[in-house]
Image 1 (tube, rainbow, N blue to C red):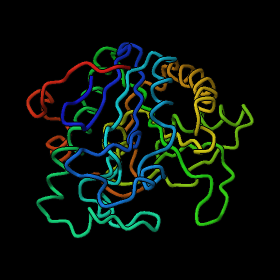
Image 2 (cartoon, rainbow, N blue to C red):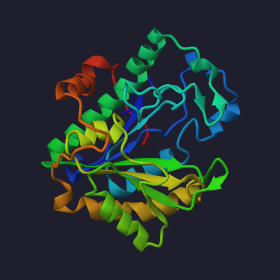
Image 3 (cartoon, rainbow, N blue to C red):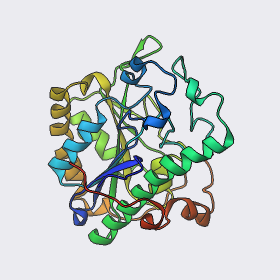
Length: 288
């Protein structure tokens, strides 16, 4: 299914298997009414616009594992779905040296318009899929978020081929890191980023609910073409399916976040769990 507002695409799969795949920054699309946010076309070839390689990797992993998935259908330059609504970096004015004219200045009304049109529908779709999988599986689903990172940052090479990010719940992260390293993959443990980010996708949908989860980052030069995507899909699919077969990774365990106390549950529910059919346009089928 694809959301008619352009906020997300949902890839159907076997709900009863208990695995969910997410792609927060999978695409670099912008609605026609936003043009290119005042940026040159070349900016949308860069990591500032999307996570290079993640859309085809997500699609292929859904095929190989049979898992359903959700990915955003808008560029992170428009609004970042992997940030909380109150995060000051939700809509970036400057990204890795690039000034984004369409985001600065920005009115409070436009800020809220983007949240309502793109950010919330994506998170409603994630919430709905997780709940459907949990109901069909009969236990807590295993949630994996896919991202990619640049080979170097500010001229400093990044040695890791992949990374696993997590907050304080390491139930999935630890065995996943071990499995990657067993394949001689140089794997970052909360490197090059820290997985504890208040209000991000896994915080909101997994940490707060006690669902088993991990964020996998792949270095972009490893999945920058079709051959690389296929190679990493073939590496990751068996690992994810092995993890998904473990009963201990389908239990609810609510861990305290390293970012501090959780917000009130009713505050989260009011944002994340409305009836999707009442707040979004009709959904239509899309190619997988």
